[in-house]
Image 1 (tube, rainbow, N blue to C red):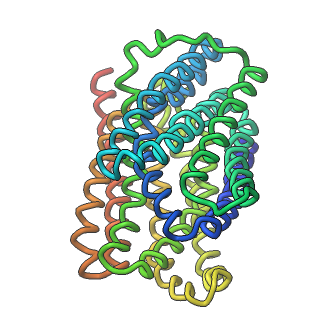
Image 2: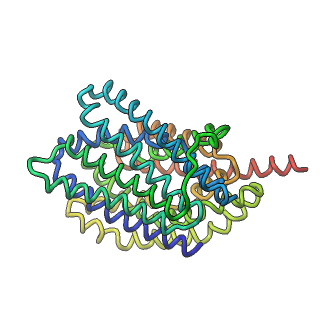
Image 3: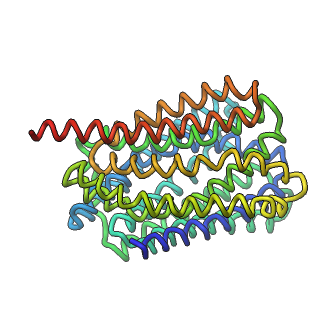
Length: 410
């Protein structure tokens, strides 16, 4: 577990460095207008993208963690599902973009961006989950870092091309780099772990659970990002920028716990096959080291926060107050991540997804009400309440379901 956690933490760290360089170079190459055009379409595509694999990667982890001999059929099912669902969602993304932004934008931007995300990124994601299923986390981290590196190389290619960089040109570079690396990831899994048996038949009877995984991931993205958009529209871009930078630092501070969660994810399915009590026992073993890591991160951010923000430029120094307000989220997230994996591993992903959807709606409504009154402090309070709700709700659901299982056995 320690080895796998270190591998995951290293992967998160390397990916964060590549993503930062990619972001800076792309913004400089495109400029505000072209970058805004690309990001506007990308946000829509990313909202749909979890449905491209339809939770088949999570189901791959679930079944292979419990029975490794099922790898060829589950790997094949994940690939077949992603290819079919991803292709259909490319068309849906183009349709929605055409209705919102116009049909020229749908062809020039939505088509290549959707190909890069729905097929490229999703194929690399299920490939990383294939390594995660057999607890070879070095493969998972290599794919994550490799995808971020592929995007970075794509930006370098964009800047080397003659003429002025544009959102249209970058969208196609984005598609080629994404699909190219996605195919390489699949070939690597085939060589390292075994060839797939391509078929949708293993997904029979599991479309609902796969849908729960996809909706949960989409809802997670919604309640994490909606506050930045509303701050920019309702207060100012400066407030959104300070809040966004502080939020990114808090998110970076969660890398260690996220790494522990990814490393332990297959184990939750193994324990969950024995019952909710067994998965809960494993979860409680993880809570103390996770909370200890978070406590250390909080102290480090309090002490080093001014220095880190100062590196970004003088204008970001005011973000320290925002950072302090957001630190409680690290504790809330620790509790609800571990409880959520306990539910998912024990066959209650539907309960987890329902709570995530409620939190997403709750977060949106609170931001609408509190941001006009308190600015970024209102966004912080909305995040406290929604993440706190998830922490209480996940553990409350665990104890309720545990009691129900005990009564059923009695």
